[in-house]
Structure formats: C-alpha cells, structure tokens
Length: 376
Image (cartoon, rainbow, N blue to C red; front, side, top):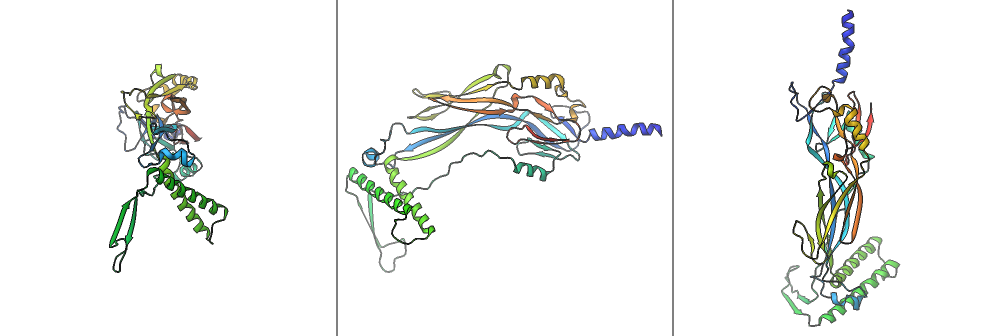
C-alpha cells in the first residue's frame, strides 16, 4: 500500500507534464508519433512597397497651353515618371528549416494559413475576442478611376425618324472640327471656367433651381468629373502603380550588424529598371538593414543558460513549444535624392526560446510572431 502511494504522485506529475509532445521534423524519434499538426517558426522578409506615378500625355493635346490659359505650371513631358511614396514593413513566412510536429492530445493549438503559431491553450472564441482588440495594419490600395472618354476633334449629329430604335438612328453625320489646336484649347479652357463657376455656385447655394440634397450631391459629382476630364487634356493623367520589392536578410555573423542590397534603378525620364544591367543616367536605389543588437545579452542567456540551447531530439525538447523573439532592425531606403526610414521586427535575428512545459495559455502577435499574452 505504501509503495502504491509513493508511485501515485509520480504518475500524476508525469501525466500533467506529458499532455502534449513536440518533435522537430528533422529528428528521428524512436517511437512513431500519432497524428498531429505542423507549425513553423517565423522568418521575416523586408517588403519595400514603392508607388510609382506616370503622367500620360497621350490624351493631353493642350499640354503646351496649360501655363498660358489655365495658369498652371508647364508640364515636363520629358520627365513623366516620379516616386510618390515608399512603405517599409516586415512580412512573416514559415522558415522551411524550423518546422515542428505537434501531438497535441487535448491541448488547443491555433495555426494560421502560413503554418505559423497563433495561440496555445486558448479556445478559438477567446482568441477571436483577443484579436478584435488588436489593430491590424492595413495596406493602401489604389482603385481604378473611370474617366469619361470623348473626342473634341469630332462633332456628331444624329437624325431619328419614326420607327428608329433607341441608339440606332437612321442617319449619323460627322464632320471634323476645323478649328486650330489653339482655338480648341481656348474653347476647352472657357468650358472649364464655366464648370468651375457652376461648382462654386452649387457650393455656396447660388445655383438656380430648388434641388434636394441628393440632387445637389449628384450635380457636384458630375461637374467634378467634367472638370477633371478637361484638366487631363491640359496636364495629362497620372497613373499610379505599386511595386513590391522583398529583401531576405542574411543571418551570417558578418551581416548581422549591417547589410545593404540594391533594389532597383530609377529615372524620371526612363522610369523603373530592375536586374543587374542598369542604364546610364539612372539612380540606383539601395536598402540598408542596420541592427543595434538589443537582444544580444538575451540571446547569449538563452543559448547558454536555458534548455533552449539543447539540440537534437531528446525528452526535454519534446515537452516545449518554441517561438522566436524578434529583433528590431532599422531599415533605410535611399538613392536618387531621397531617404525613407522605418523600424522593422526581424524574427530570425532574435533567439529561439522554449515556452514552459506545464499547462499554459499563450497568444502570439500576428505580424511579428512575438508572444503578446501568457497565462499559467
């Protein structure tokens, strides 16, 4: 009886500690594990989103009269390209060299579509409630703008007779506008002034007629569209395009403190060029990653003083979930007379840490992979 009482606490202790099992996928366990789940530690790439503007002068026949008739700065047709903005951020993906197999038993484990660990020991409802309080960084997206297309060079007259269907007149006569380019530009400038006066009258309530608020809003939008269509014929239309460049940081000892890579070449006349061959007269845009190594002491402690320093497949490693504590890196994008800077959390620059073996609740940040909530 005394022997049974002595063994019973040991059995309870082992059962509480062995509620789940974690295997590195590169290990060769002696006992084949049953069905489970896979998760990976995060690996961060630096994403540089560059928004390029191109001013299209193909449909701007009156560009040379913009300064004279509208008082606008003379457009530079020879330099149609420009950089509007640059956004620097970190994007996490699964590290192919650090996958783990989990035999969870009754443990709740949440893994996202990237195979990254989101939570351990937390129910799905509690996790969704926690996420609702976390602001998620959004990406600006550009929307296509519909622009009315018409030709001021042509003038069309239609003739309908009895029996004609809508849109199918019996006679359509078209004749070319015989006015000179300057005369057509002057007419367009006059029409633009009339539209702008109508918008001002509508804005200050001097517009003739009794209109409802909905009608006033509709008229204002229509006048704005007509104004923009005429302006495009003087200054051209700007088309924006966002291109994303990804930098995979090197993790060797020589590159941890600082590393620089060439992203692309750019010229206001030629636009964007990528690849090794850079054309003459173009500025090369570089990306520099500089780490202050703020986690150097923490990394040394984890490697030398904790169980996380053990490698291979052993009983101790099978009882713990691993996570990465990301390191802050200062990213600078420069070249061509501009500089953009931002701080990015790089997962692979920080240490790999073991979570406690006992039962717990933990939630990890969706963007960085860092633990943001822990409870015993």
